[in-house]
Image (tube, rainbow, N blue to C red; front, side, top):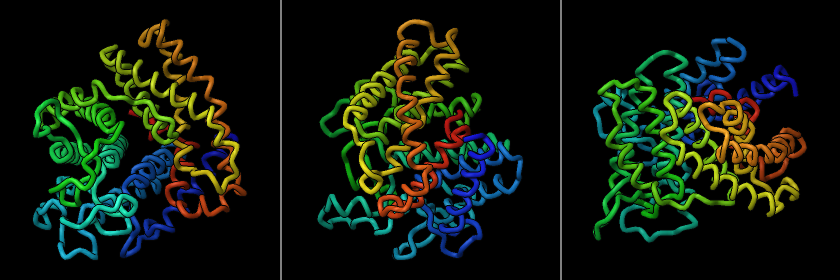
Length: 382
């Protein structure tokens, strides 16, 4: 596919998404979902970069505003009203991320004292840490695209709110831990177990924010970065879930770019993350799930693997920063999976594979992540 054809496909995918979810044209009650919208913001910024058409930057900014005014406030079916931060109306509008942001799930969060239902919990609202870090990244990209520091300030406020709520010291002592899911108002854990990659994602995202802040004291996240470095030091990152592997590749790409700016301080971490990603890619390739028909595949999970080509190229093309030894060999091993990533993209670009219930049942997230894989520049950038 040529770049013009790719851009046209992404434009069509994102136009359909905007219409379905009440973004463009704007609807009184838009359907917002934090993970999908974080990718979508980056996609619109990438379309603006490719076409120089201001409409795409305007849509990205409108999406940011809709997310804050929808997911930064209590649900319509909640007895509580206003900003989830508890701030008064005007102050909440000036600091829309200070209380975090809801996931945007269809069902309300489970009430305090209500029996826990693991299956039902996947459809219940609340706050996910790894969704919040994706939104922080999207706000950084908006700040860079608009040269407006307000968006960066909102990202830092979100980082501080999330860190304070999701991290804790166990009663028995020892190192800090994290919760996987918190209540809408961040007052109580809904799922106390720790997400496998949340500490790594937090460390990298905070580091990205710190770099974007340029040393400004009011944007400093040094205490949070130190906390997260301790939490993620000994974590087992290996996974055969393609979406999880994609998250590792996304984090590895950001680590590489941060190293590109500031030397080799994160070299050991990059090696560790690449090792986990390579182990996961090998396991995923052996499983053979890409031979299944479309109705048995989840596009948004597979499309996480599309970060393979960009990361392999970045490490290979910067030998002065990343060295010519073990890290280069890891990059070469990663490059062997580029055909796998290309096959996934090619499969889901085919309109016939987007007619099954597996696609239509997750249409919004599938659409947005396919667009990201086709035009990943803004999403993968730091």
